[in-house]
Figure (cartoon, rainbow, N blue to C red):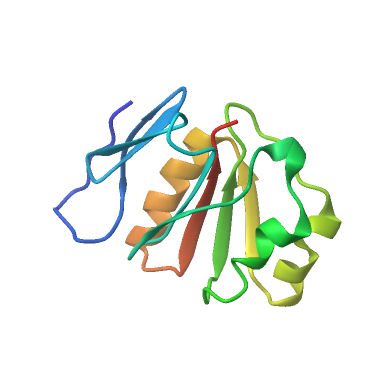
Length: 126
C-alpha cells in the first residue's frame, strides 16, 4: 500500500509498506537488509533486536534516552505483546508503549508525527 503526505517534508514519513518492507520518504527498507528498524521524525536508526521472540530488556533501553512521548512497537505481520518486564523501564520513564502489527504502526506513526508528537516506531520484520 502507498501512503502519501499532504505536503513534502524533510521529516521521515512512511510512504508505503508491504509484507517484508517499509518505504520511508520513498526509500525502501526491506527485511533482507535488517530484522529491525527505529524510525523517528528526524532520523532512522538500526535496531539490534533480532526478532520478536528474542526481545530482551536491553532491546528497549535504546529508547530511554530519546526523549520520546510514545513508542510504537510494530511486531511484524501480526500483533504480539511483549512481556511487561521487558518494557518496565519505559513505563517508569512515562514513555507510552503501543503495540500493533507493522502496518498499523506505520499508519499510526504518520498521524502522531503530523501532530508533532515525540514519537518513534520500532519495527520488527520477523
